[in-house]
Length: 260
Image (cartoon, rainbow, N blue to C red; front, side, top):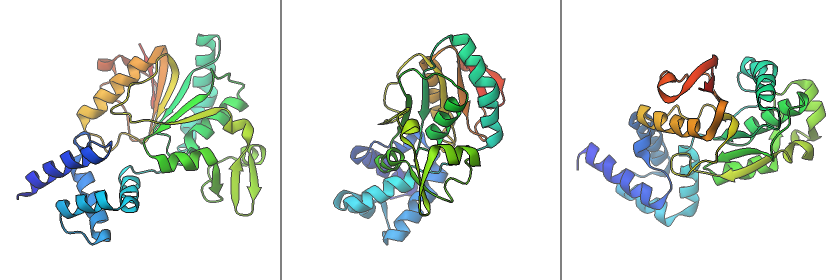
């Protein structure tokens, strides 16, 4: 069987046993990640690999974690968070005249929504209900809900916030309940599930980099539909939306886009 046909069959069968449709992802990057995992498992072809995934739950779970690329940091790209705190939040609060509805899409192990909650607390930004934080991976959501991180994992947290909002236990730090209670963690597949509406702010940062251009455009359109008029989407430092006007957004600041 040629490589193209083998790949096509593999992604069809993988979609049957998981919630992941690899047609939405850039093939070269996904093939590299999958091949490296197969080598680790001593598997030589996709047919054997699918059999292993079906038979062994532990290997299946490790593979899903490997594939969904969970990398997160507190206050990643600190300059962008400064813009959020000093310019975007005050503007949104002024426009809204009430509590803000906020969503961290692809929240991974929780660093992003916890960063959001700390900034909101420091700036006295009122939140409607709770910050919604979603991810596909159950394992990372479990870590996010626990809210415990190593010293290295909280390097990006400014010392005053670290002192104020974390409780230290040896070399580990746990977010305090005041911040935890500001967030609702939920499992969600961004490419398949429907979205809630009327968000004032959506963060989707360092999530779409492995998606095809067509999938990115579809996802950003869904985000636009989920925003209130004048709501803002905040993206990652490698994820400028080049067709922003075409899908109803205009650039507010670099990496911040407002729904027209």
